[in-house]
Image 1: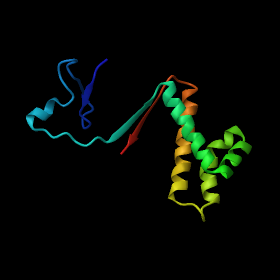
Image 2: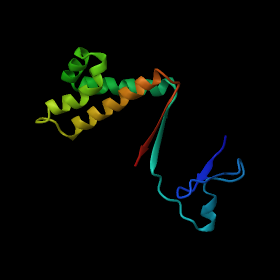
Image 3: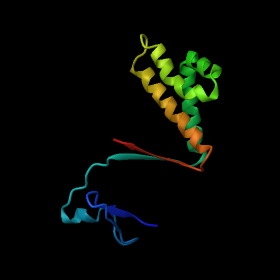
Image 4: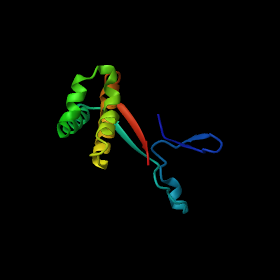
Length: 126
């Protein structure tokens, strides 16, 4: 196990010298560090999954009509409910409703993934 640096043009990988060479080794030679392009989330413990479940509950509590719609939907149809709900309420929908529905969809994805794995690793492009 170790850290690698990659030349995206050639696809070549080079391993850092473990415990000797830091990730910012080139900085001391005047090479600027670029801004990160990804945010990485790792959900791998009970506290993380409980936060995810609380997020789902908070969103459903904010939108009781949405919660009712979910409760009545077949399990296979639940994934489509967030966007359908937002579309049904598009006249009253503000950006908060759309963001909450998108978050609900993501949080449900995490819960489903945790059924098959001990952790979920998400990399989100900035």
